Length: 318
Image 1 (tube, one colour):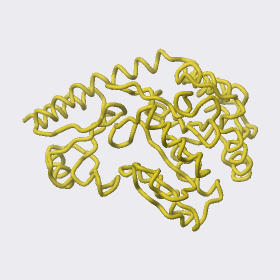
Image 2: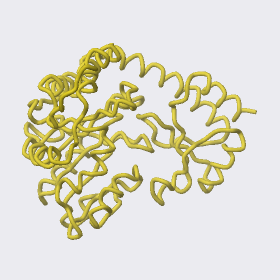
Image 3: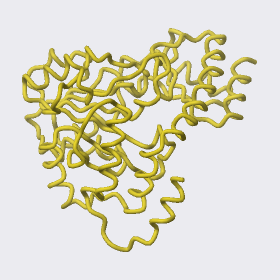
């Protein structure tokens, strides 16, 4: 279905609009309403060329500089820090943004990459309230939102979190995980319409346009929930096999209640664990890649094919 939509839109020699087609913005707004229990206007949706592009360039697009402070999670995907470093901003890694004086931008990642931790609606609301009190933009990277295993993640756009309006708040979403479309490079931000308009005004001069065929594929993907449930089923089966194998091998799984990863530790330096897996022909990510607080963990991905997952269990069980 999604591939058919991409192929059907292949005859697209003209420039796409940076704002995205009405159809893709309406599809995104409809998905937010249907799946997240929140309401946004299509005009408050901004297509992006994969969510990573938006993460990396947001401080620049906001006009931040050396006087700005950007808050990122204590254990975090490195691109949050890279984007802030590009503009020379001060970077503070903490899970208590309320303790940071006068931040300009607060990043949240729930469910988290790499830990799989999920923030409650109450905690999200506290961070949003603080951000509004100091006029900081709060942006929640929620690309794993539909992959909750032990909890049901809540979006920052939900009324329980941000109230009836989305002032000072953006959610960031992706098709890469929920639809297995990483190669298509499609994501979107939604929320504060004034901020979306500000970002659009800059992006249209930088050529940040999602190709028209990809937009058509995104419309198809956002309008169909069945393929997401099918993909979830695959990940759930893999997760159970890999979690059991890791536990039997002496690892403790921390957090990991959502997302595509298991956050595993044996209480040893992460590179020692990396070496143990490498000896068995298995690639995992060292936890210190995500910050010093991850120095005794490794991130184990659930993304291998089923045959690879079976080999994983066999190799660490031998």
